[in-house]
Image (cartoon, rainbow, N blue to C red; front, side, top):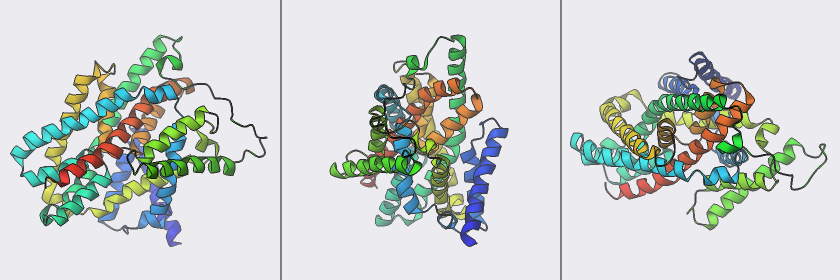
Length: 389
């Protein structure tokens, strides 16, 4: 009963977020509302391990992240993936803009150690936050130990609604373009290609959900093995996405394969619950003592992202809204970048052709931008900034 009760609470927090998002037409993202509910719950009556008790613990995440990324790769083609160098450039430039602005203006307002401890989690995910926390402990800066994780939590809460607004503006622009020219095809806008011929054709009775999941598992395992061979020089998550694209292109994996197995939503809800469970490490007292520093540095960081993306949007042939949204992925990365983009598209149109058009243009930029910043750049930044403490 205890485990089922934990599962029920987690799902209630998820669907309340979805309902609020629907009521506000995605201006208030579901993930933002769910994050608020989890925060209030952890600060009041919820046990810290409720997500793990709901079956969404570390073991679950170790399985679901690689296969989810392989699945997302099947939604793209090689051309789409290669074309994302612009999104990567803008996202990394946005991160650089954050570093420059916080190191200059930030160090005028606050002491050096505060700014150095805050920048890596501001430009990345939980891994960089934990690295900085350990580094602060080792350096004897106990008064700042709470800062990295608190920064990670707070910047996501601000980043979700802002990214949603940018994506809605970009989505409306794309829909006007699409509806104004009915002859435009998805292929002309980095669209989803036709389904490749299957590598081997099985009778339908043998192409079961278990068989398709086994294929995804093989590709996911291969991505982890390859990352190990390269000693992590390329993140396993990036490899999983690329292999998902390749696996679909050669006909080994069906397009959107986890949708065909009916497990995609289960995995996404579980992964989001696990990410939001990190809110359990914060307390009102912890945030209260460093709230001003966090908010000011977040504002400086986001403004740095905006300036960098605004400057590069024209030479990179991207709208200012799409460029800024790509930069903002540094605040949360996967899976939030997928959830926000998919949610916005769902509220903009119900037409399948229009949804495909928006997804094929916006989703690759958000996913690849998030990997470039959170999965790769933020860890490098944390490693460098640890030496500056």
